[in-house]
Length: 444
Image 1: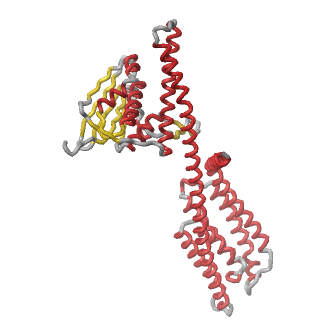
Image 2: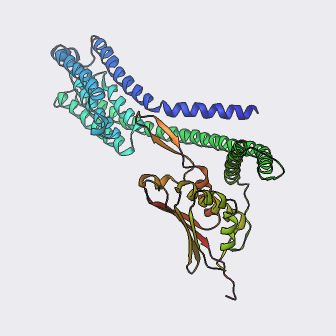
């Protein structure tokens, strides 16, 4: 019991996590923007320290205004890039990569203004390289590292032809090694993080499977418990309304008949819930045998004739005798009952229902058509789904469904080795076609 509670709580946390995913991305954008600004302010304080190298302090005195300008540019760039440039202009990966190139170029100017190869700001090159290697695909990581390597080579120009050139070249090679070492480390971290995320996702998927299984078992138990009392209620109501010895006023008899009809619908829903639970928990079993299609249709119509007659619907059946199929009799009758009941419900008074069949070499195609309200074109792809989501006018996501009957029909037909399709025109009617495996014998 505690395990079920923990699983349900985990599902709740997972749902909240998905809902807050978009908000989380926005917060990350703001954090990156804030980090750039704080980093620049800290850098401005650090450059007040004496700089190393033969040209350090003399360069700083000359280029200090340039350093301030670069820092100011980065602040404005960060604000504009994250707040004004919309994501639809650039893919997220490309936007991130361009941002990295801009920061790397700015770092080149800062390093150049503070001593070049001898500047203690050379470590800044590692930051965008590591960031790209850890967050973007390999091609972007390599491009970023090459770009940083090329920019670092520009600092050697300051020492060309001087005695300090050999030392500057050594420092450049050391920094170059550091760049590619950081790139390799970033890719390694990406691989490790990917493995960890995959394991977390597998764990979450397994949790959801367990929760789904618990849900199906719960539905199965509840539906099974409800089936017995609703069957008893239907039996009592049928006895009261049909027994000639029981005298009832017309009004009371009408109310009891409506109650019987409602209880029958409830019993049907409970039966479908049980069927869904059996299908999704794998508890359903099939017994394939030779079935006369005409007999199966007549059996399915037995409980529906009263509804059809009440609405004065013209029912036409054109199924040749000895049309044999190889299916589970009970499951086929269940599908037929669902489809004919739907046709009856959505067909207005004095409408028409047609049940026709024709055979191919391997299949029997049974079509159940009506002159009912029809199904909108954009909904045909969702009609066999158990549930689907739809955005309301207010932007709220709503869960909807056409009823579990059609979902059950699709699942059963798939497991029977056949299929079911729908064609419909709004205002003119709907046609469901069942593709049933044809029965054949070696002597035929």
